[in-house]
Image: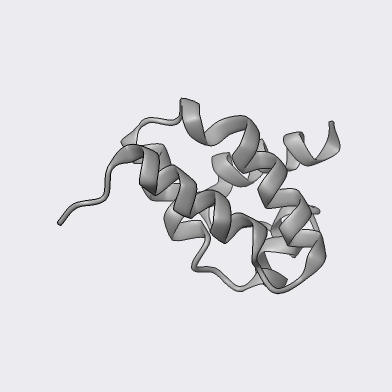
Length: 85
């Protein structure tokens, strides 16, 4: 059975909230709440893949300590902007 869009967004929001380090919980849950509903399928696929990355790496990418992989650069930039608001 395939996952509906609404169920997928709920799952991604939950995974955004329950990361492992509190900083990433806060950053990603804020981003997910503001942006997931407006994303197309490709955007959701990319965000879903991002959630499989290590929290320490994600935190360094979002805070600009380390450059993210090219395939995540636009998404990380968008997350970082949300985090700074």
